Each structure stands twice: as structure tokens, then as C-alpha cells.
Length: 154
Image (cartoon, rainbow, N blue to C red):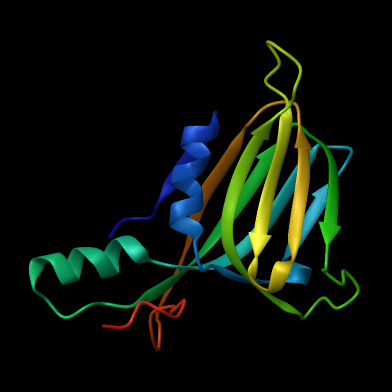
């Protein structure tokens, strides 16, 4: 599979990025809010759901892989964390979803992007508008197993 590169300029686009990043893992030290640049960036190890699903559909043995990927948000006005110790830079987080909630102001593209992690942790980015990019950075390795959310077993 070739490297993934996605741009999000609205909520629907962000939902696609969220789907590709479901179950991505990262270290607290691999994320940064840069207020002067109005940017939030993070390096993640994403589970490649697309490759795994494609193999299963074709009848081939599932190829379980993780890929090193970068995610950045532009036009970020503020960032708040919930249940994340920013001093523990080696702490691991498992990303569940990314959601955009528009502001209540009519005709405004502004709102909040929330990154939700397992265990109730979250990051809320206040943005002028949705402007995000997900890009694979090249490193690929075999995953030991697919993420399991319980209740998926037959």
C-alpha cells in the first residue's frame, strides 16, 4: 500500500481521518501545541485498518501493520487537555476518535476539535476552522494483533 496523505477541511473530511486513526497509539511527548504558529501536531503509530480489511475481503491472510504517521491541525486558537499528565512524556495514549463540534455562532467555521482517547482522556482544540492533514511518514512494521474493543468476538 502506498503512503496515506489526507487533508480535512470540514467535519466530513475529519471523520475520514478519524476512521484511519482509530486505535492509533502515541506518547504524550510526541505531541505539541505551538501557539505562535497556531498549530497542534502529533506523531502516532496508526493501525492500518484499510490494509487489514482489504486482505480479509480478498480471502488472503490478514496483514496486520502499524504505520508511523503525522497529524497536524492549523488555525488552532487554544488547546486544553483532560486526564493527560503532560509531564509524563512517556505515557501512552490510544486514540479512539476525532470529532468536530461547530461553534454556536451562525455563519462561523470555528468550533472545537476533540481527540478522545481510551480511559476518558481528551484534548480539545479550539479552531478558526477545520484544517488538518494526516500523512504517513514511511515507517511500517508488523502488528502483533489487531486492536480489540471487546464484544467483537464471534
